[in-house]
Image 1 (cartoon, each protein chain N blue to C red):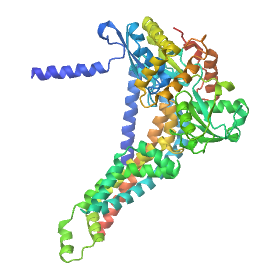
Image 2 (image 1 turned 135 degrees about the vertical axis):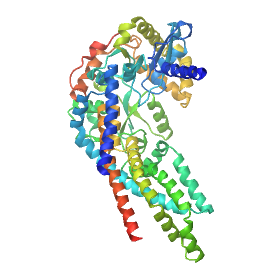
Image 3 (image 1 turned 135 degrees about the horizontal axis):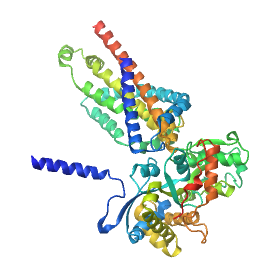
Image 4 (image 1 turned 180 degrees about the vertical axis):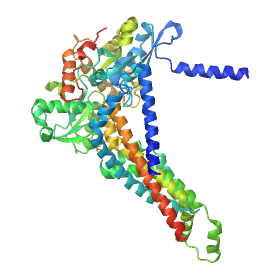
Length: 330
Length: 250
């Protein structure tokens, strides 16, 4: 009977351990154990995160970091509050929405200087050099997604209304674009762009990308976030994590480390052919480090303020949140 | 029966909401993680008309999908009840189609039929029909010996008669399965809308998810639940009426 109770107690303790907040467990060798929730699946957009983990940058900072994949059903900010993650990646609109609802979140770095969300089109079919060229075109938009917000802002910036373009509701596959039902289709230019370009090139078609930031709409994409409590109670851990992470990102995009970066990427993204991965890596470099003088992680404060303004204008938030106050460079 | 279904649903839903609020206030979570009661109330006031119309759209597709799947399941069940090669072939085909995840089949459906009404209907019917098929196969494969024996020995048994005998003898089971399948039809339609459509409550839930808006999702769940409770209650009432009619005829 005693053995049964001991076993029962063991199971309870084991179960309880699963519910302990992330980061409270000490790993082997005294390393601090942390959980880092990404925004999306393992692909080139998280290159620096994977590189930091694989090449020992976290270990060098005496950290044992579990990098977890994100996905459509994952929300890093919620996980921070619930204690399932210590750090995470979220887009600026997520951060601003969370702030508007009282979430104690802070932003530690802006990973993408240019938003990878752009529109692919066939230059042989349509010519888009300015926003007004969108008039009378069929434009793919994910209702409720960032691309809807960006497209509305672009149209409004040139005095165009929704009636001036034909909006095509986007779903998860590209069939309508392939079948020419839509002239422009939203894609992540660094990850999906090279794959679609390659497919269409094989079919003898040329593609081009319409970049909203080139037309004045700077909607901030992925950024590293954590909780106010983490910054307040464990500033040293935050500092070490951020240093290791950003060193990892910088190293991953150094030309001399391309081979190693591709090795790491192909380990996590097995389904994408190597030549495509190379293109993805080169394209991502332009988005996270547009110039040598720009440090990865730098805040484009003006872009953050513009993102907040856009969300306010489109009534996605009820009142200003002062996003500038939660951008903390470590 | 109908009022009971509705208040039972309300009890379940309110209990769920109470648990969420308890977690929210116990752990001091922000409105971003779990919305506050005021947030929920404001969202309900803001979206109930729009979401109500969406649920009605989803329900209409679900009802048609359910009718299609009942018809399909009856056809396959009747054909598959025989222990012939063809009967076994029909069963294997029906089982295999069900084994494929709908998200994998969905792109093929959208290529063939676009992302309008028909795709929603087809996916709803595909999700809904299998449980009905299993029940129909079970019922149709089981001889009602004491009645069928008479027709067999007198040489008057035809397949239509066999199907009628087995259906009437298991009418209660059939009506229970059919009213239960309403849930699956609704779930199937919502899945279809979530994957691709540009209408219905599944589509609205997808948008709410993009916007990390749990209040909208909770409002949508409430409207789906209450609509389903009413629909199932009505189906059960119809089933009871048919049952009484059959008893009187006998």
